Amino acid sequence: MVFKTSQRHFLKEKEAKKIILEFSGSVNVNTEQLLGSKPRIELVETQTAEVFIIDRKPILMRLSGKLLPTLFFNGVFPILPKVIVNMGAVPYVCNGADVMAPGVVRVDGDFERDAVLLIVDERFGRSLAIGVALFDSQTMRKLAHGKLVKNLHYVGDKLWNLLKEKFDIV
Image (cartoon, rainbow, N blue to C red; front, side, top):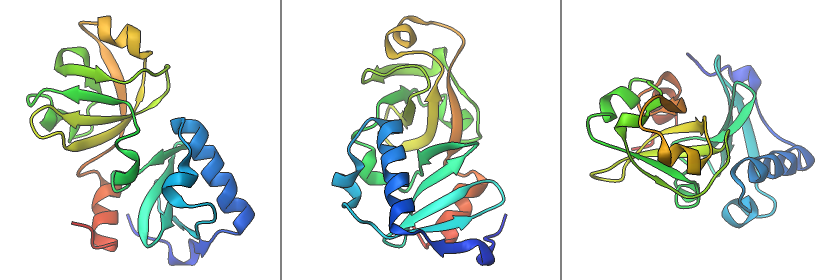
């Protein structure tokens, strides 16, 4: 996967505001507080996603039509609802597996189905993946088996590796 440099450009102020509003709605938070009222947003198209760069950091991405934070957008992590997985589930999640009920230690926050979630490990609290809830939080807490979260972007996926390399993020 490579950046298509011919598809890299700054968004107009109106387009940028639309992206900010869309993201605010998808994660249920006022992103103007995180990004400012008039951030300059650069759009980079990759083969699998559109990546939105703010202050030279890949902050947001549009993947399968859904606007999501990247795993490099640390500022939004405290706000997102979380699914904490046991250490046995970590290698699976980091290989792209969806989150299954037996691997879930705890569900933090209240959310509806299709909410954007952060998946973290239980020991260190490290961010492992961004996913979408397949159930609301109350239902998810009661389930003992089955798939709970669709894994969309995880540490070590092609997009994560590309962004880490391209933007020199450690």
